[in-house]
Length: 171
Image (cartoon, rainbow, N blue to C red; front, top):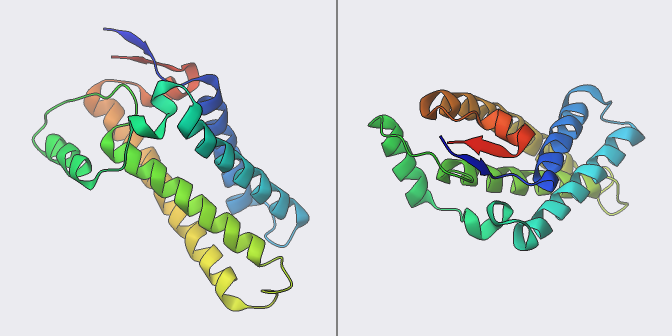
C-alpha cells in the first residue's frame, strides 16, 4: 500500500472552512442578518482563492489534473456497475464533476445574494428565487458528495475523508 501526498494545506483548509461556513449560512444563521451577508462574502472569497489555486497550486489541486468530462464520468459509473476498481490519486472523474458543480453553484449563490443587497435589484424577486434554488441545489449536491465519499471509501478501500484531513491517501 502506497502513501501518496494528495491534498496540500490550502486545499484542506479551503475544504473544511467551506464546510463550516456553508453549513452555518444555510442551516443556522438568520437569512436577514448582517452575519449571513458576511459569511456569504467569506464563502465567495474562499471560492475565488480556490479558483486561483486551481491554476497555480499543487499538482492535484490544479484544474488541469481533473478536467470536467462526462465521458470519463460515465466510464467511472460503468466501472462501478461492473465492480471494477480504479482508485485515483486526485479527484475521480465524478468527483471532478462535483467540484465544478459546487464551485459554479457557490458562485451563483454569491452573485444572487449580492444582487439582493443592491439598489438596482432591491425588492426584485428573481435574485432571491435564484438564490434559494441554488442553495437547495448546493445542499442536495453536498449530501450526494458525502454519500459518494462514503461509497467510494468502502468500494475502493481508500479512506477519502481521512485524506482530506491528513493530506495523504493510502492506496
